[in-house]
Amino acid sequence: MLILIKFLCFLGDGGVGKSSALAALSLDWADDVEHLRHIDLLFLVQLRHVSDNIPLSDIIAEQHGLSKIVSGSEIDSLLHGQTDKSANIILLLDGYDEYTKGTNTEIDKLLEEVMLNILCVFTSRPGNFLKPLENQVDGELVITGFSKENTKRFVELYLGPESWEDFMQQARTSGIIELLSIPIIVRMTCFLYSGNHSLPDNRTDLFQEVVYKTIDRTLLKSKTEFSRDRIDVLLTMLGELSWKALQKSSKQLLINKVW
Image (cartoon, rainbow, N blue to C red; front, side):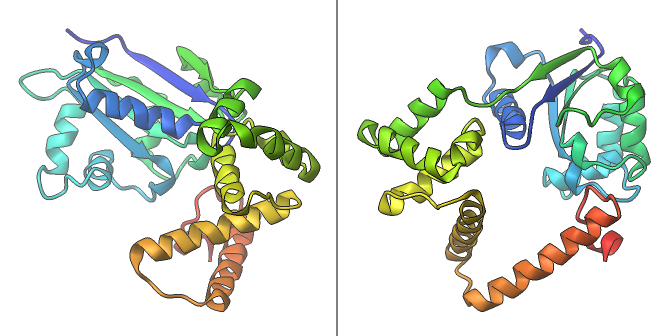
């Protein structure tokens, strides 16, 4: 039985968990949870990595590591219902707000037309809809982030109940407290606090510490050695690239399109 044709959108500010929601949905499908058993195929596409006019089927094959298993034409046949058995498909498009219309004609067409057997779910920050797309969305789910109770529960689970009051006092003093509705920032802030029971003095220092800790963790996992000076040079180059992208109103940091 074909599923109803729908467009659904997960809306929310940066870092509130839109991508995580799609990842959780994908995991539920892979784990064969009961409410998704009628879905034959589920594909998750990161729109931030989509460039040029690469066929959607090839994008799916590449992002799912399927290139050596199935051909793009086979995936294309499934998407367009051209096989002997019509498949119920969910297509998750993550990061619509990071995608620039005109980058890929197949993605543009998908977002403007309804494909027969596909439920299309995408994520976006508020205010990044194009009018035609906004008018055809059947439903919106707004993800608002952590409540104070959510934050308290997370902090107590991560650091222990005895750390809650001191953690919040330091967050108030540094001005970080206003950011604690964003789950990823709560996670990063708890990680920093767990080191020596102190938080950075302000948001700028918080961002800098998070960046360096993330780099240190990545280098440790990859067993790569970089001096802090070299890292500073690379971060400066990334900043210049980001500034050029901002000047060109480019949402995607595709070096060949920006530099």
